[in-house]
Amino acid sequence: MTTKQSPLSALKRQANHIAAMLKAAERGEKIDVQFAEKIREARGRRTFKFAVVMDDKILTIEMPWTQIKGTSETGLSEYIVGQMRESRDTVQ
Image 1 (cartoon, rainbow, N blue to C red):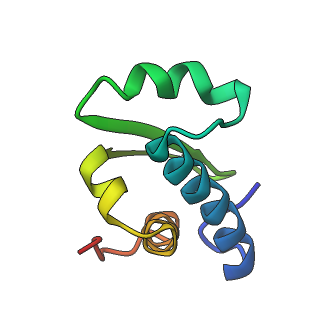
Image 2: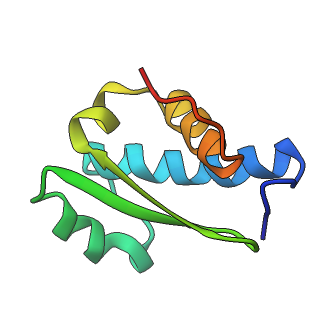
Image 3: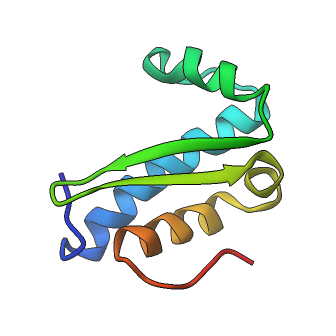
């Protein structure tokens, strides 16, 4: 688990995994069975809400599918790391 003070490499590793799963889900690819049903249900909605579990908090992030589609995996990962570190920047 991570906290906002965790090494940047640990935060990036966790965020990269989440971003890869988001992009795979957006493209309709197979993903971890643990999340597949919930993501399939979420595909019918305009936005996707997901949680990032950390030792010191649980982040809830809601993003429109259009933003997930229009943002690179790297951009999504950077945004998630920013949220994990409690920065005020937003995805453009």
